[in-house]
Length: 190
Image 1 (cartoon, rainbow, N blue to C red):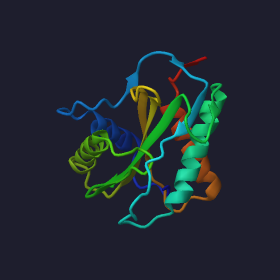
Image 2: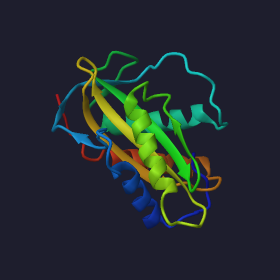
Image 3: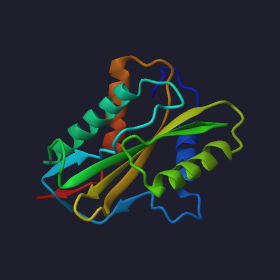
């Protein structure tokens, strides 16, 4: 997902990301925080069989890095990972865009109408600005969902400039930093 040569000013990238997720008209919340979350375990969304992607990338490697980073963060908050049936379900959406196109990787976000609305908002921000220089940005949105009620208890996102050909260590570090930022305000109670 990352590449190792900066292609855009970080402030512009952040501004685009904020605009992407704040452009009006859509009722889909981009950040949800309903206070402390009472849980002891978590598991990741299992959407079932997925169709092959129309674009090529090492998706499984990226998903493994994201899930490892989320697991590191949530276990650090006192939760325990379980294969399935956790108190919380973790869902995440990856949006990658540039001046012209926007792609979503929603393998672990599910078939919610939220995904379409969020990607549409990101697309408008990525392609609607005055930026004439080429850029690539990626947004990671993470939901923590009550597994019993299916209510979103926490939602936040982070946007990063994509780098050209990062080393595996740099990519892993950047993903962990992004996840930590997205889950920064999550408070867990047992």
